[in-house]
Every structure is written in structure tokens, then in C-alpha cells.
Image 1: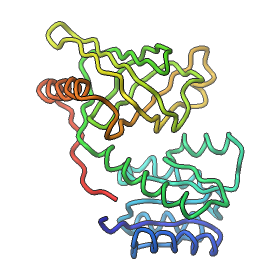
Image 2: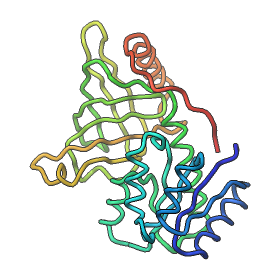
Image 3: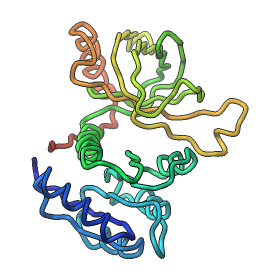
Image 4: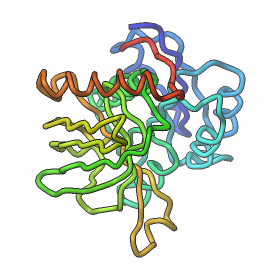
Amino acid sequence: MRELRILVADNSAWTRSMIRRVLETRFGATAVYEAEDGRRAIALLEALKIDMLVTAVELAHTSGLVLLDFVKRNDKFSQLPVIVVSSHEDDRTRVDAIQHGAVRYLLKPFKPDDLEMAVRTSWTDAVRRRAKRYSGLPPHTLTVTLDGEEIRGDAIDISIGGLAGRFSYMQIFTLYGHYHLQIMFEATKEFGTFEIGPVDATLLRIEGTVDEIGEDEPRCICAFHFGPDAMDEASRGRLEMLLARLAAETPEIIADGAGDI
């Protein structure tokens, strides 16, 4: 595991100390920085190169949600994974945190094992998001079958590790839910049609504003992750063929990432 620079923001010195102990004992982390309030957290983010942020919702001076907004709107932190820890059990706070950019939400009090898993999976996901993927796709529609229910949407980007698409919002979309996907890309005659599946996938992100959710036909963006054993060899071969075609025909490529945890 490479050295991670992690910022922990929480009003409680005890909570910050507990999180630090988990990071030090389970990951060997030595570059752990602490912020007792939101203003200090922003100052440290601006002054240091931080790989991950663990923050409470309840912060003095600048709230955790304002801190999340600061991270989300700053290009410098576009790849920064943020884990939110909170004593709020209500779904509204959880949804607010996710909509403001949190990748994991831990309810206080949480166990060291829960924090370890959140850190490990958040960093792994961040590395995969930085992996080469292709966006600005040629005109594609995306058909995904979620547990037997067929949903059509628009493809946004795809990589060997997952895909993102824009869909009509449905209750079947559950954050961190596990789904069996059948994927079909319909393109121009020159590009061809690719069918991939079945694929085991986890829904890692749902994005949509409150205004969109209030519409008659609200839309959302869903990002699915493919695990290492998500598909059989035939489906992986078709996906690799699709990516090879995109490499030749799609100009916009998000650069490779590196690292693991």
C-alpha cells in the first residue's frame, strides 16, 4: 500500500483520535492530518496534497456539507474520495451527503472494521475511476436489465471497471445495491452494436438534484462498478472489443490512474 495522506475533520477530539488509530494500525498511515472545524479543514486542503477526506456532517464554523461543496466545486479535488461520518440516522442527511459528493456514509458510532472497509473500498474505487475510460461516446443508447426489469438510458462513459449512464429515476436504484446487468450499445452502422452480459455490478453513485427528483419524469446518473469476476470470458472479450473501438474513434480519454490499497 502506498502512503496515503488523509485529512480527518471532526469537532470531537476523541473521534479524530479513534479514526487516526484505525488508519495508523490497519493501513500503516503516518500522514494523517486533523481539523477540529470546517475552516481548518479547508485551510489544510488548500495547503497540503490530500488523498482522502474523512469528515463529520456536524462541524463548527463551516458545516460538513459546505465542506463537501467546497471539494466538489474545486477542480483540484475532483478525484478526492470523501467519507462522511455522522450521528444522523435520517435518510435525508444521508442523501444530502451523497448528493454533495460523499462516496461513503458511516453512522456513528461505527466499528473500526466498518471504517477500514470504507477507507479501503473508497480508495480502490477512486483508483478505478481514474483508470482509462472513454466518454463523449458516439450516439449510443444503453439498455440495462436490473434483476429482470429492463431500463433504457443514455451511455455517458465506460471502462473495463464499470459504466455510467443517465436514466429515468426508479425505486429499483439503491445505492450499493448489487445487480445483474445486460448491456446493449446501439450505435451507427459503422460502429456496430455490442451486447455484453450478464454482468454482476454494484451501484456506487446516484446523482440527481432535488429539482430533478421533483419532476414528473426525474432523471439521474448512475455509476456501476464491475468486480474482478463480474463477467464471463465472452462478455469480457466483447467489452474489450468495444473499448478498442472507442480508443480508435473517441477523442476524449480520461488518463490512467495508479496505485492500490
